[in-house]
Image 1 (cartoon, rainbow, N blue to C red):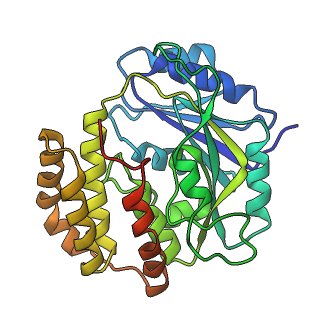
Image 2 (cartoon, rainbow, N blue to C red):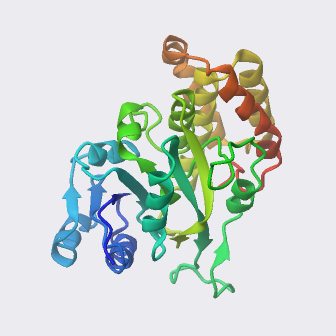
Amino acid sequence: MTDPRTTVVVITRDRRDDLLHTLDRLAGLPERPPVIVVDNASSDGTARAVRELHPDVRLLTPGRNLGAVGRNLAARSITTPYLAFCDDDSWWGDGSLARAADLLDARPRLVSVTARILVHPHPEQPSDIESPFEDPIVAELRDSPLPRPPWLPGPALGSFLAAATVLRTDAFRAAGGFSPRLWLGGEEELLAADLAAAGWWLSYAEELTVHHRPSPRRDSRLRRRHGIRNTLWFTWLRRPAPAALRRTVHLARTVPRDTASLLAFAEAVAGLPWVLRERRPLPRAVEERLRLLEAPQRASHARRYVG
């Protein structure tokens, strides 16, 4: 079986071995999807290894670290109606890309489908867990409290996880892709809100599977710093003032009290002039959906800003 409807986009930086493992898995998919890798200025020989070991993969080397915006670069040249994201330490399950395309084909107002995520232990990290387990975020996706139209294939979502989502290429491009300001870390929330404001629906689809083998090569403090900052920026860019204030206060009370968190808030404040210029509150219907997610987000064990 092959399926020409979906292109897989992978962004990477200095994770050569993890990326090669992912590309091996993607090459074995029955759909045989075209794959684009954006190498965000790796210094570990990633680009050379991809050219040598996966010559069928299209490799983009912008020469600097674009973060999530590397996905925008790849999306400019995609000719398939759908694009699937995955990280350099994750890969799609057999048949999931074809099934996702089927779901999108049949529902013109559905812009994205997010898959169930199974986590695998990394061979470089000692673990007592041998078999894959469900990522804790999946329970939140499955139990989303948002009202849904009857034609949606699963629970309605207020956002998506880029590493486990298939989207409509044209809608992604029309919305501007991921914000260069946000760069990386919770960058999906702003794009998802803008897609919803444009009339699109996002959904979780239980029958789709993404596998994730978390790489030990990550700067968790930098990712947390960007995640807090981007959450604050999104909140004040798109939410009404009372909701934005509630979320800001909650973050201030709950994030670790350390340098990373302090820098996150400082960067968020430094970006306030830009936020005020670009502020565009969401339509009432979309805002009402996001309000329904506030309580689950506060109670979430999968959305903690730690590390």
